[in-house]
Amino acid sequence: MNATGKGRALVIMGSALVISLVAPLSSAASALATVLPPPGPSVAATASSQGNSQGRQQRIQVLTAALRTMQQTFSKHRFDTPGPQDIFDYQIGDLWKRGIDGFGTTIAVIEGWNDPNVSKVVAGFDKTYGLPNPQITTVFPMGKLPPKCPLGMVKLGSYGSCDAWKGELELDVISAHLMAPYAKIVISATPADSQITDDAASQVAPPEMMRALEYISSRHLANVISISDGTGEITYSHGRDEIIAQDPGELAAAAAGIPVTVATGDCGVVQNLAVANNQCGNTSVTPDTAAWDDSPWVTALGGSVPNLGPTGRKIGPDPLWHVGRFSEGAGFSSVFRRPAYQNKVAGITGSRMRSVPDITMDAQTGTSQSAPLFAGVLALATQLNHGNVGPINPALYGILGPAGVRAGIADVVRGNNSAPGVAGFSAARGFDVASGWGTINASRFVPSLVAATRVENQESSARHQAAAELSGIEHGIQLSPGVIPAGDAAYLFGQGFLPGHPVRLYIDKVLIRTLTASPFGYVTDTIIPSNLNLPPGKHVLQLRSMLFAAARTFVSG
Image 1 (cartoon, rainbow, N blue to C red):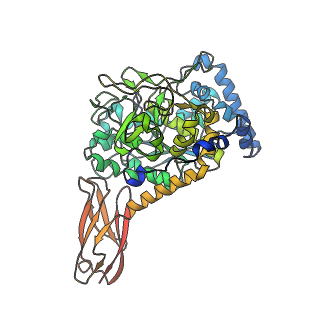
Image 2: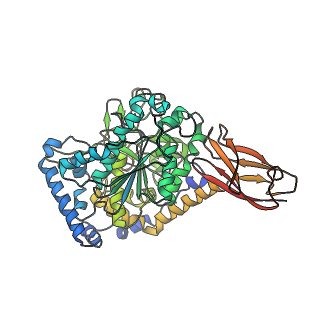
Image 3: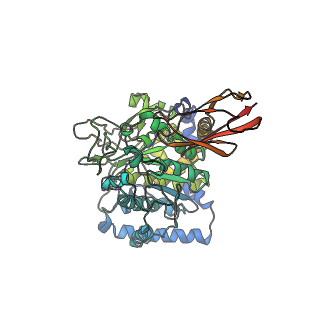
């Protein structure tokens, strides 16, 4: 969670397929002149193609009036965040005036608990500026919330207790809603320890949240997903195996074309330890990054600060967010190798590992704010595209980033994320580890993203690759032999499961027994068809876990 008790961040993966994630566009450089839309008029033209219905015109009138209120009261609300400074800094109003306001899209925010008062809080925010109230729905991917907050979460205090999650939820919803005021909002409430009393890392960043990604993606409940949670890679008691076991969540979203934005954390170049009970109160002593935002399949959001004058006009490049011990997470994953889309910046990063963030947004209340803000921007792009735009990283690195200002990229050139006693990374001109590509001018970025994702079917290639990766996980059961002679037995091996979590073994949809994944995430068993009274012939074996179900067929004699 963030510096005010509202945010954190991360995610993970790791096969050769992920490492090669969408090769850079070979024709990107020559395509820039034709791919990116010309200034101004093209945005209006595209928006007008969505119809000139009375509803659209009414939305424009409402938001034009809201912009006027924000301008007239800017001196009063200048430092409110999220607030008018975000609208003016990212030039969101230019899109609103053309009917690009999130209408027809849905943004999901992934939370660790529910807040029955969120609608009332958002309504109060909207009343201040004359914004429309969003339609908010809450889903519970792991079933009803427990009657009490899980003890492991309670111990986290302001860093991740159920009470703290209420504040996080309100920040997430308001941030996303501010950018795309007519988008619907889906809140996913998934606390920790739904299956077992998990380790500390999984109470800070519950794997149940990765289940939420699958739930939302398979049911087409949202077009964009934002996560303001995570924990450092070094905090997982089972290490890499525990991290990559959570890959199916992000893969499911990517395969569905749903972009996922994940906050990079608020403790700078280090990460809060999972045993801390307040943000950045007990950190790693060496550089670390958060597991979920490290995934090559998500867009990692760092933090910057809008740079506006007293009248709301931009007065220079936005600097990195850094206040005292708090600053955005940035650095290199120790688990995920550099994806192919980052090869073009390998000379800058100087690392074979995935670097984060990819881009930044306002993080004055922590990167828990920047992730949902950017999710709101992606909802605007979804509306303009008449469909999902994710995963966006291949287009960001292959076309938009190199195009710079013309594609709506606003450079961040000042600031660093050093922590007390640990040197971090500094912003510089162009791409850098500290800020990724910088931040955005949404009025140019949104139409440019829509155009760029269509070049050489980049979004389609990424989606197919994610689907292939997920399919490999779901068909990874080993059974030897696959044809079991009468009276004989076969050895079962399955891997990629959450360490210590239950894995249910089914044959022909009948529960045989429940296994427990080893500390390395694998399960083994012996299948003796005669002991199970299986008739001769073909059978279907399944291993079902929280995050995926793997299946294969076998023949008994």
